[in-house]
Image (cartoon, rainbow, N blue to C red):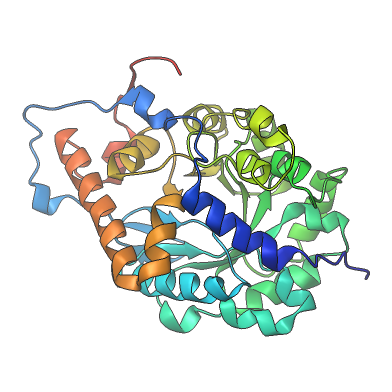
Length: 341
């Protein structure tokens, strides 16, 4: 096969880290702030007995949270991924790594993603852009990425708007659904399709499910706008123009939860444990976030641990206040829309 080279990948990842850390990249408040959980003055539960745990790909987590894909490859990637992995293992949450296709062409980059030894007991996911199926990659490469880090599965991300605004973006998204349907049968581990912050519409969610995808991370607006991030790397106003485009995460959840049998992950605007609780009440099985952990991941695993534990505590209190003794009862909570975006 002929692979499209990406000589700018290293610098781009470093630029992404700097932009997300230093610049304003969130044009909207979280869509979960437009909803209210039910409040029970007599919750009839003991907060210490509330069960926040869940099973995710055969492994028990302390609460339904995935550390979302961030980076890898550049020198900072190794530090970020190790700190995240150590924190994930300590708290017992899942970890998704950043886009890994660099290791196909540069095997030496594997070390920045090779973190299984730091998180042996929690779900770990590789990552590649789904669009790469149009640029020379297939089942063999996907299986290689999974096996290279002993992952439990892989995130195949879709990000057409980001790619269109990105100066060196891959923008041939033609025929990807049929290619995905064929390649799924040859991938040895589970596949999760995820957006990166612009949302997955209900029609696409249905088509993905019909193609054989059983887990989708809808990752909508309300968090980092990657069109805006790419805009900072340009010399024009294209990113500024498109920074507001996309589907709010809560809206994407409501559309996709109508598909019986489809498992949903809520990313995009998850900033605290209350947001996680609202995501579960809106139909998600799991929640995910990256931005709250980027700064801490550059500092230490302990800094990451503190952020994740704080989210877990906030989730527990939100469940207590709504009278939810476990995630099943939280998923049935009558959440209320309080105003429109």
